[in-house]
Length: 243
Image (cartoon, rainbow, N blue to C red; front, top):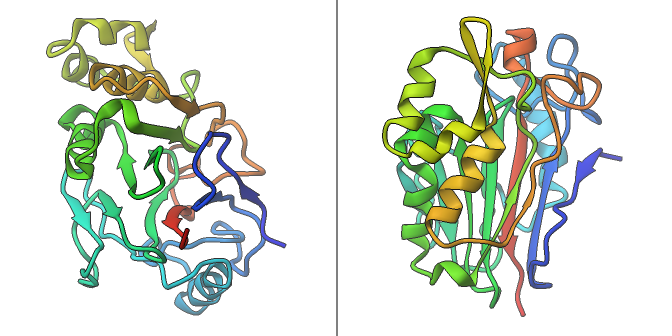
Protein backbone atom coordinates (compact mmCIF):
# COMPACT_ATOMS: atom_id res chain seq x y z
CA UNK A 1 0.00 0.00 0.00
CA UNK A 2 1.28 3.43 -0.94
CA UNK A 3 1.29 6.08 1.76
CA UNK A 4 -0.79 8.84 0.19
CA UNK A 5 -2.02 12.23 1.37
CA UNK A 6 -5.57 13.09 0.36
CA UNK A 7 -6.37 16.82 0.11
CA UNK A 8 -8.66 18.15 2.81
CA UNK A 9 -10.72 20.45 0.60
CA UNK A 10 -14.35 20.64 -0.56
CA UNK A 11 -13.64 19.70 -4.18
CA UNK A 12 -16.42 18.32 -6.39
CA UNK A 13 -16.79 14.54 -6.44
CA UNK A 14 -15.35 14.23 -9.94
CA UNK A 15 -12.08 15.92 -8.94
CA UNK A 16 -9.46 13.41 -7.76
CA UNK A 17 -6.11 14.31 -6.25
CA UNK A 18 -3.38 13.17 -3.90
CA UNK A 19 0.26 13.62 -2.93
CA UNK A 20 2.67 10.74 -2.57
CA UNK A 21 5.09 10.48 0.32
CA UNK A 22 8.52 8.87 0.30
CA UNK A 23 7.10 5.52 1.42
CA UNK A 24 5.94 2.43 -0.46
CA UNK A 25 8.36 2.10 -3.36
CA UNK A 26 11.45 0.25 -4.51
CA UNK A 27 14.36 2.73 -4.33
CA UNK A 28 17.24 2.35 -1.91
CA UNK A 29 18.78 5.05 0.28
CA UNK A 30 19.19 7.96 -0.12
CA UNK A 31 16.17 7.78 -2.45
CA UNK A 32 14.18 5.33 -0.33
CA UNK A 33 11.71 4.40 -1.24
CA UNK A 34 9.02 5.87 -3.54
CA UNK A 35 11.27 8.18 -5.53
CA UNK A 36 9.49 9.37 -8.68
CA UNK A 37 12.21 11.69 -9.93
CA UNK A 38 14.20 10.50 -12.94
CA UNK A 39 17.03 13.04 -12.72
CA UNK A 40 18.18 12.92 -9.10
CA UNK A 41 20.73 10.10 -9.30
CA UNK A 42 18.54 7.09 -8.52
CA UNK A 43 18.65 3.77 -10.39
CA UNK A 44 16.45 4.31 -13.50
CA UNK A 45 14.98 0.83 -13.17
CA UNK A 46 13.85 1.56 -9.62
CA UNK A 47 12.34 4.87 -10.71
CA UNK A 48 10.52 3.08 -13.53
CA UNK A 49 9.07 0.55 -11.08
CA UNK A 50 7.97 3.36 -8.77
CA UNK A 51 6.29 5.20 -11.63
CA UNK A 52 4.53 2.04 -12.75
CA UNK A 53 3.23 1.63 -9.21
CA UNK A 54 1.90 5.19 -9.25
CA UNK A 55 0.32 4.59 -12.64
CA UNK A 56 -1.92 1.87 -11.15
CA UNK A 57 -3.70 4.59 -9.18
CA UNK A 58 -4.28 6.90 -12.13
CA UNK A 59 -6.62 6.93 -15.13
CA UNK A 60 -3.77 7.62 -17.55
CA UNK A 61 -0.02 8.17 -17.62
CA UNK A 62 0.90 11.31 -15.65
CA UNK A 63 2.32 14.18 -17.68
CA UNK A 64 5.79 14.74 -16.22
CA UNK A 65 6.84 18.36 -16.64
CA UNK A 66 10.43 19.51 -16.90
CA UNK A 67 10.22 21.93 -13.98
CA UNK A 68 12.48 24.98 -14.23
CA UNK A 69 11.18 27.29 -11.44
CA UNK A 70 9.40 29.45 -13.98
CA UNK A 71 5.83 30.50 -14.69
CA UNK A 72 4.95 28.69 -17.93
CA UNK A 73 1.61 26.88 -17.75
CA UNK A 74 0.99 23.91 -20.04
CA UNK A 75 -2.56 23.08 -21.14
CA UNK A 76 -2.80 19.28 -21.29
CA UNK A 77 -5.96 19.26 -23.42
CA UNK A 78 -4.77 17.79 -26.71
CA UNK A 79 -1.12 18.31 -25.66
CA UNK A 80 1.13 15.34 -24.96
CA UNK A 81 4.42 17.11 -25.62
CA UNK A 82 7.17 15.11 -23.85
CA UNK A 83 9.47 16.65 -21.26
CA UNK A 84 7.69 19.98 -21.48
CA UNK A 85 9.55 22.82 -19.75
CA UNK A 86 6.81 24.24 -17.55
CA UNK A 87 5.97 24.63 -13.88
CA UNK A 88 2.20 24.28 -14.03
CA UNK A 89 -0.37 22.30 -15.98
CA UNK A 90 -4.10 22.65 -16.54
CA UNK A 91 -6.76 20.32 -17.87
CA UNK A 92 -10.45 20.35 -18.73
CA UNK A 93 -10.37 16.81 -20.14
CA UNK A 94 -11.36 13.84 -18.00
CA UNK A 95 -8.47 11.49 -17.32
CA UNK A 96 -5.61 13.90 -18.05
CA UNK A 97 -3.37 13.90 -14.98
CA UNK A 98 -1.69 17.17 -14.01
CA UNK A 99 1.48 16.24 -12.13
CA UNK A 100 4.01 18.18 -10.05
CA UNK A 101 7.16 16.78 -8.44
CA UNK A 102 8.67 18.27 -5.30
CA UNK A 103 11.02 17.75 -2.38
CA UNK A 104 10.55 21.03 -0.43
CA UNK A 105 8.94 23.28 -3.05
CA UNK A 106 5.22 23.86 -2.68
CA UNK A 107 2.79 21.88 -4.87
CA UNK A 108 -0.46 23.79 -5.35
CA UNK A 109 -3.66 22.22 -6.68
CA UNK A 110 -6.61 24.10 -8.18
CA UNK A 111 -10.11 23.18 -9.26
CA UNK A 112 -13.29 25.08 -9.99
CA UNK A 113 -16.45 24.54 -7.97
CA UNK A 114 -18.24 23.12 -11.00
CA UNK A 115 -15.67 20.36 -11.45
CA UNK A 116 -14.79 21.32 -15.03
CA UNK A 117 -11.19 22.53 -14.67
CA UNK A 118 -8.13 21.45 -12.67
CA UNK A 119 -4.54 22.62 -12.43
CA UNK A 120 -1.33 21.92 -10.56
CA UNK A 121 1.55 24.35 -9.98
CA UNK A 122 5.13 23.92 -8.77
CA UNK A 123 5.78 26.83 -6.44
CA UNK A 124 9.23 27.12 -5.00
CA UNK A 125 10.26 30.57 -3.86
CA UNK A 126 11.46 31.57 -7.33
CA UNK A 127 8.23 30.51 -8.96
CA UNK A 128 6.12 32.15 -6.27
CA UNK A 129 8.02 35.42 -6.59
CA UNK A 130 7.83 35.33 -10.38
CA UNK A 131 4.06 34.72 -10.38
CA UNK A 132 3.47 31.04 -11.13
CA UNK A 133 0.22 31.02 -9.15
CA UNK A 134 -1.03 34.12 -10.93
CA UNK A 135 -0.13 32.56 -14.29
CA UNK A 136 -1.94 29.35 -13.41
CA UNK A 137 -5.11 31.16 -12.38
CA UNK A 138 -5.01 33.23 -15.56
CA UNK A 139 -4.65 30.06 -17.65
CA UNK A 140 -7.69 28.50 -15.98
CA UNK A 141 -9.90 31.39 -17.14
CA UNK A 142 -12.20 31.17 -14.12
CA UNK A 143 -13.68 33.73 -11.82
CA UNK A 144 -11.39 33.69 -8.75
CA UNK A 145 -14.35 33.15 -6.44
CA UNK A 146 -15.11 29.90 -8.27
CA UNK A 147 -11.69 28.40 -7.53
CA UNK A 148 -10.70 26.05 -4.72
CA UNK A 149 -7.03 25.58 -3.80
CA UNK A 150 -5.05 23.01 -1.81
CA UNK A 151 -1.49 23.55 -0.62
CA UNK A 152 0.45 20.29 -0.63
CA UNK A 153 3.49 19.23 1.44
CA UNK A 154 6.35 21.75 1.41
CA UNK A 155 9.18 22.92 3.64
CA UNK A 156 7.70 24.56 6.72
CA UNK A 157 8.21 28.09 8.04
CA UNK A 158 10.53 26.96 10.83
CA UNK A 159 13.00 25.31 8.46
CA UNK A 160 13.26 27.51 5.38
CA UNK A 161 16.09 29.97 6.04
CA UNK A 162 16.66 32.39 3.16
CA UNK A 163 18.81 35.40 2.42
CA UNK A 164 18.01 39.06 1.99
CA UNK A 165 17.58 38.55 -1.76
CA UNK A 166 14.56 36.32 -1.20
CA UNK A 167 13.06 38.71 1.34
CA UNK A 168 13.50 41.58 -1.10
CA UNK A 169 12.06 39.62 -4.02
CA UNK A 170 8.76 39.24 -2.18
CA UNK A 171 8.47 42.44 -0.19
CA UNK A 172 9.48 45.05 -2.76
CA UNK A 173 6.47 44.32 -4.92
CA UNK A 174 4.03 43.57 -2.07
CA UNK A 175 4.79 45.04 1.34
CA UNK A 176 2.24 42.82 3.05
CA UNK A 177 4.48 39.82 2.33
CA UNK A 178 6.68 40.85 5.27
CA UNK A 179 4.29 38.91 7.53
CA UNK A 180 5.59 35.69 5.93
CA UNK A 181 9.15 36.30 7.16
CA UNK A 182 10.78 36.15 10.58
CA UNK A 183 14.27 37.40 11.33
CA UNK A 184 16.73 34.56 11.93
CA UNK A 185 20.22 35.88 12.66
CA UNK A 186 21.47 37.38 9.42
CA UNK A 187 18.84 35.40 7.47
CA UNK A 188 15.07 35.16 7.32
CA UNK A 189 12.73 32.24 7.94
CA UNK A 190 10.28 32.22 5.03
CA UNK A 191 6.78 30.77 5.11
CA UNK A 192 6.00 29.44 1.61
CA UNK A 193 2.47 28.54 2.65
CA UNK A 194 1.71 32.07 3.80
CA UNK A 195 3.32 33.61 0.71
CA UNK A 196 1.06 31.43 -1.42
CA UNK A 197 -2.02 32.36 0.60
CA UNK A 198 -1.19 36.06 0.25
CA UNK A 199 -0.74 35.75 -3.51
CA UNK A 200 -4.03 33.86 -3.83
CA UNK A 201 -5.84 36.39 -1.67
CA UNK A 202 -4.63 39.21 -3.91
CA UNK A 203 -6.21 37.32 -6.79
CA UNK A 204 -9.51 37.11 -4.93
CA UNK A 205 -9.24 33.43 -3.97
CA UNK A 206 -10.35 32.81 -0.40
CA UNK A 207 -11.03 29.05 -0.34
CA UNK A 208 -7.52 27.73 0.41
CA UNK A 209 -6.88 24.50 2.33
CA UNK A 210 -3.81 22.51 3.34
CA UNK A 211 -0.42 23.85 4.33
CA UNK A 212 0.16 21.90 7.55
CA UNK A 213 3.16 19.71 6.65
CA UNK A 214 6.92 20.27 6.76
CA UNK A 215 8.97 18.18 4.35
CA UNK A 216 12.19 19.16 6.14
CA UNK A 217 11.07 18.21 9.64
CA UNK A 218 9.03 15.08 8.82
CA UNK A 219 11.94 12.95 7.64
CA UNK A 220 10.12 9.63 7.86
CA UNK A 221 7.36 10.87 5.56
CA UNK A 222 8.90 13.21 3.01
CA UNK A 223 11.92 13.79 0.80
CA UNK A 224 13.68 17.11 1.47
CA UNK A 225 16.36 18.47 -0.82
CA UNK A 226 17.42 21.10 1.69
CA UNK A 227 17.76 18.56 4.48
CA UNK A 228 19.44 15.74 2.55
CA UNK A 229 20.85 17.16 -0.67
CA UNK A 230 20.77 13.92 -2.66
CA UNK A 231 17.23 12.66 -2.31
CA UNK A 232 14.09 11.64 -4.17
CA UNK A 233 11.00 13.43 -5.39
CA UNK A 234 7.33 13.11 -4.49
CA UNK A 235 4.40 13.68 -6.83
CA UNK A 236 1.22 15.66 -6.40
CA UNK A 237 -1.48 14.84 -8.96
CA UNK A 238 -4.95 16.00 -9.92
CA UNK A 239 -7.42 14.98 -12.60
CA UNK A 240 -11.06 15.03 -13.58
CA UNK A 241 -13.26 11.96 -13.82
CA UNK A 242 -16.38 11.75 -15.95
CA UNK A 243 -19.47 13.23 -14.28
